[in-house]
Every structure is written in C-alpha cells, then in structure tokens.
Image (tube, rainbow, N blue to C red):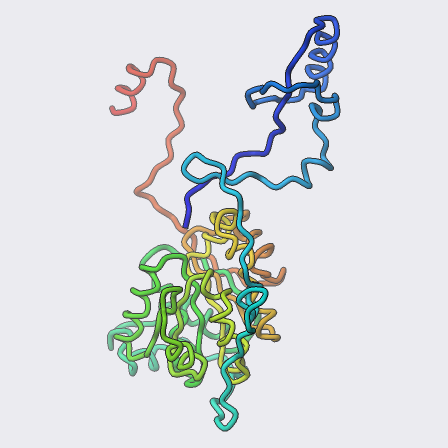
Length: 345
C-alpha cells in the first residue's frame, strides 16, 4: 500500500527562442487565453507548436493523472491476472473453483422484516447485548433491509455506535448465510475476525500471505460465518475460487464495505478499490452492497456509485456525525504573532 498523491497532469513546455519578435506574440497569445503553466520549462531542440501549449479538453480527458510514490513518479503496473478471474497469468494453468457436488449448504432467501423488540430478544439470547439493553433503531432497520435483499445501503454513523454488529444481526435469522466484509487494513480484518469469534461466530481474515488452500476451501463450504478480506485479496485468482464456487454463491448474504470512505480516498492509488464492484459480476446475481462509515459526504457517495456500482435508488441511513467538541472558527490572520495570541484567548 503506497501513499502517493498524484498531482494534476499539466503538459511540460519546451522553450528555446532565438527570435524575440516571434516569442512575444506567443506570450501574448498565452496570456489572452489564460493558460496556466505551472511546470518548469525544459530545453528542447525544437519549438513545440502552439497546440501543445494551449489546453485541449479532448487531449486532457484522454490523459491519466500521474502517480507518485515517495516523491518519484510511479508507473502503474497492470496486474498479471484478470481481476475476479481464475487465471493467474498468461501461459499458466487456469485455476478451478471449489466444487462440492454431493453437498447442499442451503441458500439465502428473502425474509420478512422483524420488529425491534424481536431483534432485541434475539440479540439478548445470543449474548450480544446486555439483558437490559435494547437494539438500536438503525441496526434493526439495516438488518431488515439485508434480510429482504432490498438493494444497496449506505450507512453513516458516528464511531462506537455499533456499525460492526450490522453484519452480525442478520445471521441470527439466516443461519446458513455468510457475509463478506471488505476492510482496507490488515489490522481491522484480524481484529474483526477475533471479535466475531468471541461472539460465537467462527470467522476468518483471508490475506495474500495465507498459504493454506484448506482455509479457502472451508470458506467456500460456508464453515466460516463471517469472511474478512482486503480488496486486493478479494479480486485475486485464489479468492476467485471461492466467489465462483457454485455452492458459495447462494450463501453470500451481502458484501459490506467497512470504512467505505476508502473507496473515494484510495481508488486512485489502490486500483482494487476502483474495481470493487467485481463481486457482482462474479456472483451473477444482485447481492446487496452495504457501505459503512462515519464519513460519507456527497462526493464519497458518488464514488460508491462509480466504483462500487451502487444503484441510484440505494437506501441512505444517516445518523449524522455531529461532533460538538470540534468547533469550527474562521478568522483572518494579518499579523501571525499577534493574531495567534488573540486566538488563544
């Protein structure tokens, strides 16, 4: 995972002039057209035509933004495999999905919504909330949407409000279902799998360094109630053996995007997030996507539609993230020292 922030792609300008009378009209032309030149000119053996110096929407739209890593330009590498496909690379044998021809693991089906009291009773019985506790309204609402397979959902809720239990509650009703939780960080995946196991939900975090194919086979069989993985692993050929498994496809209840703000913030330097809608095509059915985050403003939700394939009619559950302890103060600073002292007062 890299930390490069690609700047805007601005064409370099070649500069060599031996005739001041020819250079002056060109500069006037640039000023009249308000062309912004921010890069440092470099020497060239010949003058570039004016069309190179002027902005062209068609040319700019065709160019991709440069990517940088540690101050150096990083050329994006095309993966040797087809994302969400079974072929590792050209010239190598195609992997095969797991098969269990003589076993029936069941299938996810639409279910009627439950009342909040019914959800609370199930959660108390499972020991997930205290006996005097009550399930939150948004948790019951989202769980009913998942049970009904009613399309995509975006959930905005503050930290420590129970987002991580959202993919657990539907499992109290559908005993055979398996959710796939895509998390951006290894630490979150390991921590999430450990937390679910403590709730008596056998879970696993599948990562690239996992050498055992037995774990993937168990995941395809539905032995794990919750599967955690990072986006790069989910699109790999090894995990495709699970996604393309005919026995696993009916078991997948929903795909949860934990820390869904990463789709907007990381898609340009983590290409797997730009292809995060891949499970839809691999599964061949409309599996619900659930985006969970404390930060999902309008541009972030637009990225969910563009990269995760969220439908236009997706449900938005917005608890708002009001933080009264973080005030916003706007002040004009003229004299840095005096104004800073005044701001402290």
